[in-house]
Length: 115
Image (tube, rainbow, N blue to C red; front, side):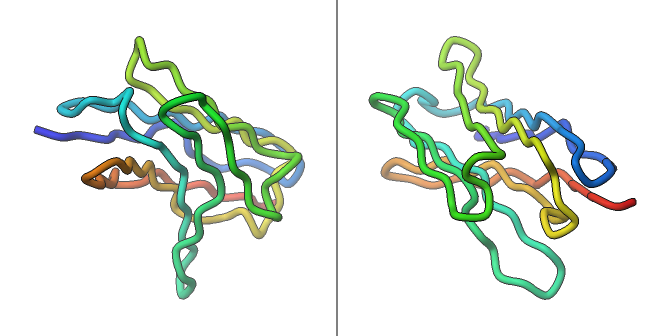
């Protein structure tokens, strides 16, 4: 069975850091581009960072660039998102997303940034 299991979310103060992890199984992880997508209540889903399958090139949206770093470890079938200098507006459920010829979603992990 295909699984994407996120972990590492939690409650942090503004300016704090979190490292999200996504453990993948049941598919050829190394062939898939991976992404972190977030959704806050009442808002649309937003892709915050992506990493390619081939050369690990990365993409960041304007809100996360300079603060977030995406990485992957194909030997462990894991993708990570290091989140620094967190802001209140980063509060959302963060989903792990895999894309190749098929696409898969994790169940999400809650990130709450609050003082």
